[in-house]
Amino acid sequence: LELITSEADVALLMGDHQCRVCWINPESERLLGWKTDELVGANLHERTHIRNGEDLHSGSCPTLQALQTGQRYRNDRDRVLAKSGEILNVSMRVSPFGEGEARKAIVTIADVGDAVDREQRLTRLATTDPLTGALNRRSIMERLQDMVEHQKMPPCVLMGDIDFFKKVNDTHGHVMGDRVIQALGEVLRACVPDKAPSVARYGGDEFAILLPNCSLHHGLKLADTVRQRTR
Image 1 (spheres, helix red, strand yellow):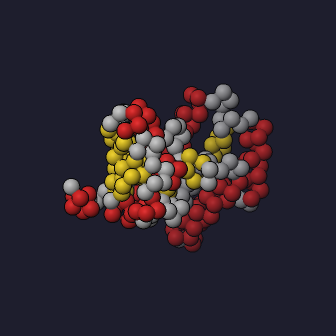
Image 2 (cartoon, rainbow, N blue to C red; image 1 turned 30 degrees about the vertical axis):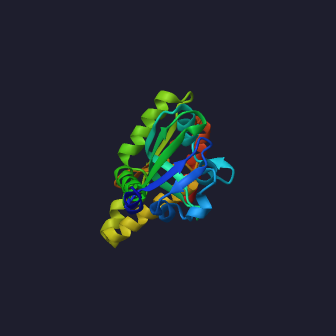
Image 3 (tube, helix red, strand yellow; image 1 turned 135 degrees about the horizontal axis):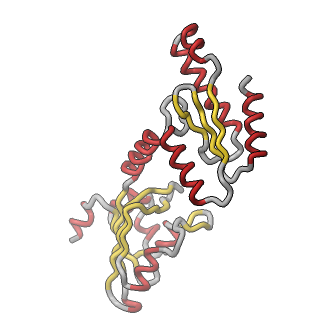
């Protein structure tokens, strides 16, 4: 058993009924950054789930809950704090055994950071325009539909294109045309007060700005700001 756990490519930890670490394997040291003597005896929840006083979980700690209830916990998209301060994306399993104060739990942690990065890259490719980094048409329409269905005040949508853009391409070439589109995208994002993505390249030289819970007065005011900055 010792040979199996020492060669395992996942982090394995054992905690007691108070969530104090009793034992860890070598992969736990590598993944989390703490040596055995630094983790054994420490509270696993306080050491790996709390950063600057804030809990990484929106609800109760699953490890603590599993120890209290005796129910297993499984999450393929969890987060833990490493010694370096980095928040790691992990897959976590908590398997409690025993009763009362004799209850312990085996915690299995696997690094899924590469998989999460791949998913985020694919999401960006599917939702953004590769030239400008703004949202694409599909994304802005989905957001618009969601706002119409769930917000009390209807959103405001600003749309515009580049005057005589064909002449830019014909005179200076498509590379210069792409630079003009990129520059416009940057200007539009700078004009939007909300940090949430709301600027989209609708198609060609057409752009859209989606403003949630926005009155017509404020929408017109932003439109005038955009017009002034893009003259």
